[in-house]
Amino acid sequence: MDVYVDTSAFLAVLDADDKNHEQAKKVWKELLTSEVSLICSSYVLVETYALVQNRLGMEATRVFHEDIYHLLQIEWVEKSLHMYGINSVLIANRRSLSLVDCVSFVIMRKMGIKKVFTFDTHFVEQGFECI
Image (tube, rainbow, N blue to C red; front, side, top):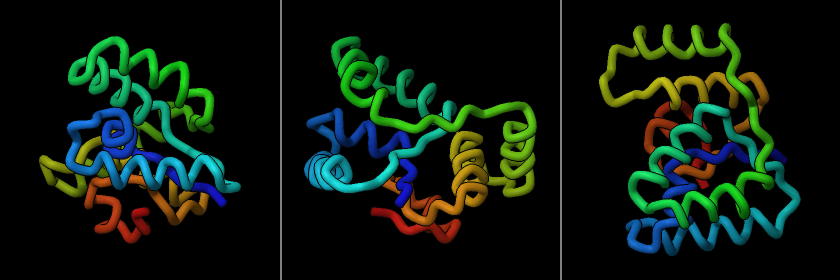
């Protein structure tokens, strides 16, 4: 089974002060001990590195890179996927819906992924199961 992992989940796992930290730790441990592939996009990676570095500092950035990055199957975003995502943002016409999220939705649909580790309600709105 494949599970998509969103930035909000990575942040909650790494940040002990995050309101979802305890739940995120529990889910993360369950995912690591199960037979699942952890999928994310290169855009989620960029967003995560930037937010972790800015909010939590370089030590947390190192932890993410050294302990988590190698566990992930990265879907690298190419031009056509980027354009599809930006068109989705423009069509949705919602300031709170990000390009990163829209690209994630496209990847999940393309790969047939139904489950996502996230605390972002946009995924539920799009019909995905949040774990």
